[in-house]
Length: 194
Image (cartoon, rainbow, N blue to C red; front, side, top):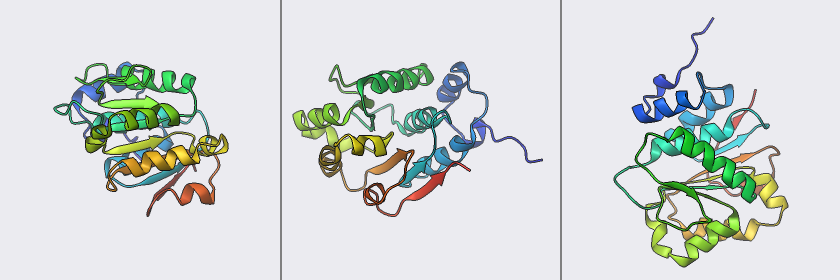
C-alpha cells in the first residue's frame, strides 16, 4: 500500500497549509494530487474531470502558493461562468488564504488584488480599464471552460488571453474536452480523473 500524499509533500507556504486544514481538507483528492504539482511546476494544464472532485480547491491552493505577497497587483486571474460561481470560488480562495497577507475578491469591486475571480465579461472590463494591471499576471485559470465556450464567450476569452504576457500560464478545467479547448493552450499537460 502506497503512503498517502500529504499537502506537506509539496512544501507549501505554512500559512497556506494552515488555511487548507482550517478549510477542512486533510489530504489532497486524486485530482488535486495530479493537478496541483503541474500548476506549481509552471506548466500549461488542461484538467478534464467531473464535479465534486476538489478542482476549485486545487485551483485555490495553486493560486495562493504562486502569489508573491510583496507585489500588490493582480497575479492570478480565475475565470468562472457566472456570478454565483465567482462568489463561491472567491469564498474558497478567501477561506484557504485566510492567514496570508493578500487581497482576493470578485470583480464587483475593482481593486488592485493579488487574485481576481470573475466572469469573462468582468475580467475583460477590468483589463480594458487598466492595461497596466496585466504586467504581473502569472496565471489565468478558467474553470468550466467548456461551459463558458458553450455560452458564447470565446471572443472574450481570446481578448483576455491576448491582453496578458505570452509567458502567462494557462490552466483550463473542463468536464467535456473539445478541439476548441485544446487550441487555447500551447503544449498542455492533460490531467484526467482516473
